[in-house]
Length: 273
Ligand SMILES: O=C(O)CCC(=O)C(=O)O
Image (cartoon, rainbow, N blue to C red; front, side):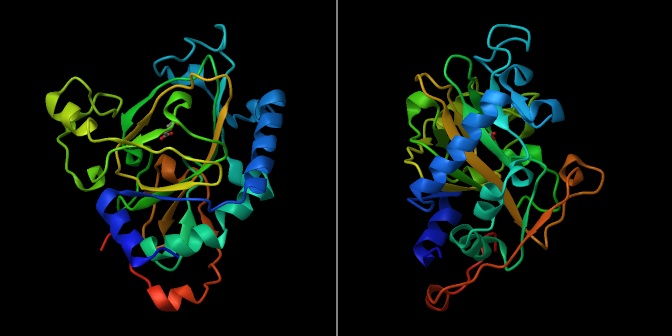
């Protein structure tokens, strides 16, 4: 469970890092799955991978036919791929904490994230400043992503950078470009970006972050692929809007976590209230 102080910090900053939530052995097994998938690309034919070249982010190969054009940026639909990921998605270490923030019944959205990021050397790209809410259409902007580092994450291999408190800020539409990236040419945006914090992570560390928290990440400048697993959750009282991409795949109802005695101690304090 989160302590009341952690919930206050999440609500204040829009993200929270919890160290060593996943065992190293689990991280190693997930990494082995990803390495195998990158070697054989089993999901490529089914559209279950995303290529760097398709997004055209800075640093990405210009086309799938270009050198490095088959560099996989992430393995998609990991919930459906393997029990390793399904079990993690429903692990009490995650879900007990999320119920404190999102309410008693948790849903996992398969329509974005639900992926294993594979930030590879040579051909990875810069993810510019953005809020993840751009990926979803829900009744309320109340979704939380859970980012599990499977290896060390540092600035030089493209660790996340997050801007504290940005989830509470209202931004005029002009502060974003046409692709919904937060513009870096505006002095008021630059001032905010200067407050960003780097999320340096060890394997097993988890970042919980709000869907309105501005974040970015650089490309991988090391010789080793960086692997991170990301799922996104919302409360059952927050529905995806019909006819949008958010309803393109079934929502997963996450079984209720078995709560330990610390729940009695800390209680349930919902965020977003
Ligand atoms: O690792 C990265 O490049 C960041 C990914 C990201 O922010 C996203 O997919 O929303």
